[in-house]
Length: 125
Image (tube, rainbow, N blue to C red; front, side, top):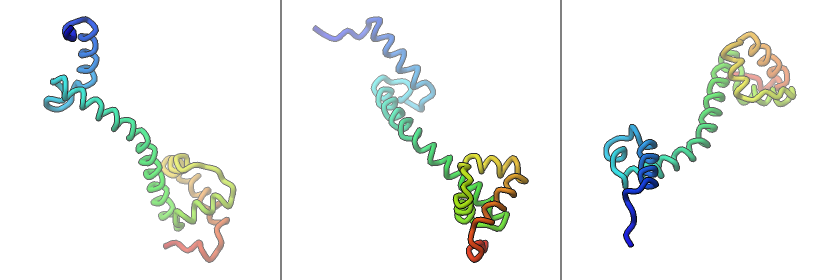
């Protein structure tokens, strides 16, 4: 017996797939086989990039902090070292937000970090 290709379940399946590939370029958004392959590939990228996004944001926060620290005469690594020595448990996301939206508070945090860094190693590069 041959496979049914025009039933209600088949229509639902196709409708669901083509809804997902709406807006894709070329045949990937119009033909059944390419659409199936493209959806599988898109799902793989989505899974991978949910993890990559976390890395990207951490890199962004570190870059922002590094720039803010450099403006205040301390290296990023020394700043983080000073915060750990002072037992100040603020993550990089929060520190980055403070540096952007509340520079005066960030100055105070930098001073705390500078106090807890040994004197000979607090020379800015």
